[in-house]
Length: 259
Image (cartoon, rainbow, N blue to C red):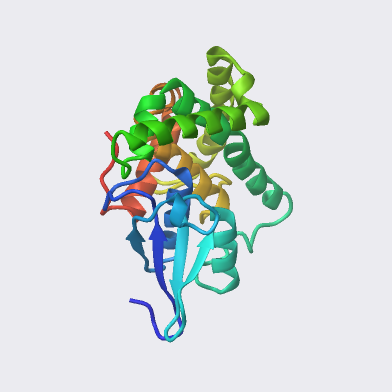
């Protein structure tokens, strides 16, 4: 329960799946930061059309006696929450090149992997993705909206560049990303005790990069529209799965774990 000086927080995740992770890595990214800061929040359903920027997630802050305030874009949401001391500024203590490393890891996943896995989800596994993303829209309207979403995603991915690769090239690029992340995690795990959480930059506490990495690992483990990446993580990059399991046990014990 929020105190008088603290806002009530509702995180709109886009799906009515309480106590479960959702397919969006950016939703889990914010949940990770809220939980590791021990900040109370509730989950709402919402949808892209209800959000300030037309996307998920978005967050509502309700201060006592004030109108609700909506925030959108995971990076900007967390920046605002840090500035208002609602969540801990976990990067404040980074030194030297650590700030650049943290930013590079986040950019690698959010600005590169996101589009590569968008191709896997929206092109290679379109029907699965459509029915999950547009779950609240009944047939036959879902078919029409799905086609529009498909075309919009294809055009966006082609313009960004990820849509110009073959399936084999896309998979190789995805492997490169997870290979780099895995090496960081392997170095970090050597310093951790049995069962303890270990963090991307190898420190004693998580940084913003951990919120992003955890979000992307879990997103792909629970997403039925990303079967190739799920197999890749479980088969070749088990360190990523172990990392996520330890975080899950420590900070998300009320959530269902992926199978």
